Every structure is written in C-alpha cells, then in structure tokens.
Length: 483
Image 1 (cartoon, rainbow, N blue to C red):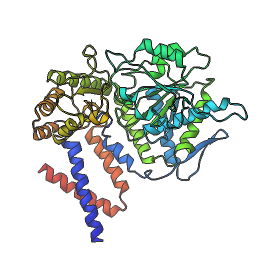
Image 2 (image 1 turned 180 degrees about the horizontal axis):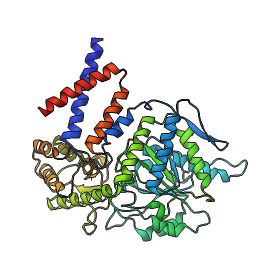
Image 3 (image 1 turned 180 degrees about the vertical axis):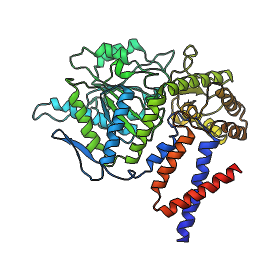
Image 4 (image 1 turned 90 degrees about the vertical axis):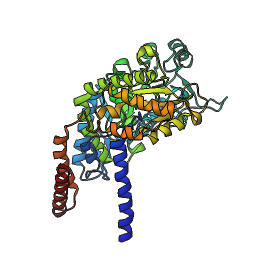
C-alpha cells in the first residue's frame, strides 16, 4: 500500500505544480483553449461522470436504455434549450464529445441522407464533391479527407484523389476569400456540401455571398459552418444561421468557455425538405458514433451555457477589443502581424504574427513557453511545410476571462517582444504580471461560487466524517492565509 501511496503522491505533487503554473504563473494565448469556471469544473467530476445514458427516437418516443437517467435527461433537455437560445436555431445535438466528432457525425449523416434518393439495386455512394478551406490556407483538419471526411467523399478515378475543391483566397490577403473566383468555382463544380470555417481564423466567412448564389439551384448544396474556434463569438463575429447555413458545428471549449465537448446545431423548420437530414444526423450521433457521451462534461456544459448566455455581449465585445489591441501593440513593438491593418488585423479572438526573421515558429514558441507565455506555432499560407513554420497563432479569450483589458495587453506585448526579438529572459516578470489576473470573470463572483462549490465538493466525499475533516482542514488553511 505504501508503494501505491508514493506513486499517487508523486503524481499529485506534479498535478498541483502544473495547476499552479498554468493557472497562476502563465499567460495562456493558445487560441483553442480556455479555462472553465470552478463550478463547471466541479460539475465535470460529479456523479454523472462515468455513467451511461444511451437514447434514441423510436416510433416517435425518446427511449433511454439505462435506469437512473432521469437527472441527466433533464440536463440534456435544459442544455439543448440554452444552446438553441444562444444560436437562435431549432435543433441541437449534444452527444458528440469533440468538434472533430461533431463534423464526422454530420458527414456520415449526409452520406445516409443522399442515399435515401437511390433506387433499389443502385450502389451505396459517398458524397459526390465537397468544397472546403484549404488546410494550408488555414482550413480546419477535421474538414479534410485526412480528417473527419475520410472515406466519406468520392474519389476522382483519373487522379485517385478525393473530390474536394477549396474556397479560393485573395492574392493580396490570403485570409479572405476571392469572391470572383469563388463564384466561378461554384458554377463549375456545383458541390454537394460546402464547409465554412477555419483553424487560422481572423475574418468572417463568405456565407451570405455563397447562399445567394446557390439558394435557387434545383439541388442546392448543404451549407455547413465549422465554428469550433469562434463558437463563443456567435453573434458578435458572425451569425451563420441568419446568413443561410443549414448546420453549425463546433467544440465547446475554445472561445465558448465550456467543457471539452462538441455540438451540432441545425435550423430546419417544420416542412423543410431537409428535416429528414436532421434525423439522419441524430442516428449517426447514436448509435453511429457514441455510446457513453461523457455525462460529466455534459453537466458542466449546461452551467457554462448559463454563463455564456448571461455574459455573452460583454465577453464577446471585450474579446474582440483585446485581440485588436494585442495585434496593434505587437506591431508597434516590431513584430509583423498578419492580416490587414485597416481591419485592425483581426475580427476574431485570434492574432497571427510572422516570426521567421527571428527564428522558426517552433523555436519561438518554445522560447515563449520557457518564459511562461503559451502560444501555438503555425504554418502561414506561404509556408511549404508545417515543420518549418513562419508564424505564431495567438488567442486572447482565456486571458480575457481572467480580466485583461486592452491596455493590459500592451505590457504583455512588450514582454513578448523582449523574448521574440531580443531572446531576453523575462520569466519572473511574466509571473509577477500574471498575479494581476487571477480572478475569473464572466461567471458567478468568487464568493457566491465558493459557497456552491463547497456543497458540491462535500457531496462527492464518501462519508460525513471525511466531509467534516475536509471542512476543518479547509478552515485551518483559510485561517493561516488570513494570519
């Protein structure tokens, strides 16, 4: 037993050290991450964690295949309601456990949908042709044949490659679509599915432009927007459903500050010929791609959805202001920023910097990490390989949650410039500066949250005696801090 204690104790020490480093000593600027609030984290480890709640629609009824699921059924219904309110849409599918899985579920549902029209004896087919964003121009991996589209799109027999064409980009700004070329490409290829959305993402997608071009086609393409990176900016950045998309997918832990899950949102009013597509998507969520869909994180997502709907406008506004401020201060400090300066370099949470004259992206990212600034090295559109990237991808969403405002990013940009340009060691300065941003915003105030959190935590302990010991130990720690 002592060996077990020693092993667990050693890892507990490492976990505690990592928690303190990531949460209290570092500035996290990775654009695909966020920190959930205390209550959201506690919800994740509550009783539903590890439970099952498989269910599907059968003969017009939602049938659950496990007992003890009344609570989680209520959670799922309420989360769907909150997210439908957030997106202003009619349908929500919550069972995917990542944004990648959400995309895969949609693609498999679409394959099932297009095969509904085949006659008896005809072979089962895949998607005929898909239009998406080029991976090398910022497109998301999960929307590529090497990602979630794998084996779900037809191949060109002449080339042996998948029938995928890319949304063309402008020569003067490769982060924006070339609308003239896009119109020509739509007319030539007439895709069956168009996927908007990127991972290197600083400008809106041409949703309304495309919708106007395809809306009267006899068999118009399905329009899908992978909003993984900008899900938490829905409305302030772009409102795809109002612009004409059928489906929105995404992960719920980047700009949307929830737990690590995926979501599919649809807008199919009664009488829509695409209503049956939603049934096909649901069937691919379960039993197609999930069984246990991580009910602890679902419970956490509900609380995060309440937070987001309450603080949406203030949070989104500050994220956009902070991103423009960081871009402006980095440019002023001598670090080239991608995008158009006339646009403030970005319309999202992301800032893209070009660091090649100071070193390879991987090296610069490691140098920043050694100084407690966490970033994401990135191949830029003119790079030939990701292994020698010219760029760094930054996101302000997590530090916005910890209370940073525009002017605060001037100091951080200066520290980053010291590291990137001069290779200066600023780790201790960074740690000291981070102490100004430790209290999470856009959620319940700490005192209110702590009262609720203590009750939740006590409910997880196996006995009243242990609970009492925990309270006494916690009270002693608080007394020591106050002294």
